[in-house]
Image 1 (cartoon, rainbow, N blue to C red):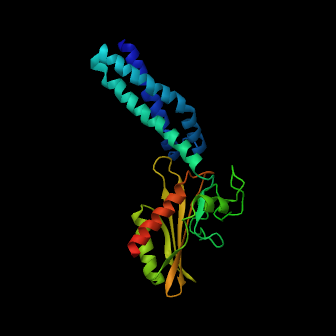
Image 2 (image 1 turned 120 degrees about the vertical axis):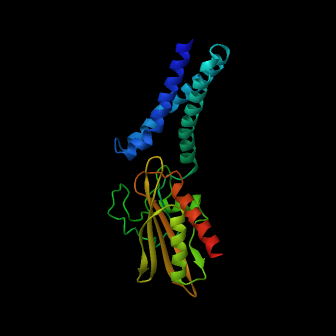
Image 3 (image 1 turned 90 degrees about the horizontal axis):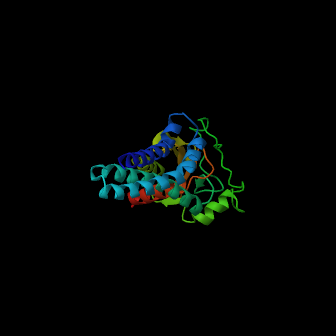
Length: 249
């Protein structure tokens, strides 16, 4: 009985660790991100089965080898948490359009300049007229349909004052500043966000231009790799907008 409890628990822990390491392995360049995502998909069902088996082993240990009960309990919790990741990823794919480039200005989106030559699979230019995968809409149309609230921000401050606030918000969100300074027609802030698990890098651009007595702020967030961002870029733009509007009062 002890051997069975040990085997079930260690198997669950090993499978969960394998799934958890899918992201760090990609960050360490042991494999590419596609292989990491494939690993998660392949381990999803085995991890769920292992979590259930560990839960059963925990109940068994309570009635037979109580001193070992903590081991299958920990394995069940760890495997259960690991199994939750692909479930959430699948839900995010279903809930969001299959796009990875979000902007507040479809006609003249803020340009990616400072990071244009960084390692990437998605080109820096905007392809709003390209068909969005798994849809009969273009990329721009898919964004409009899914995130109608994402739009330009108008503020009654000078370009310089607006830029100072925007820069503060960007850094407060934990992004790395790549460029921050005046342009011929206003101000441009370029930054990069790196995800914790896989180390995915997304470009984030804030463009500020004069608008009457105030300024108009346009934002763009784009993934350097991947087809679907699972809604991450839209969420980032919304977070920036919320924080920026709170700061400008």
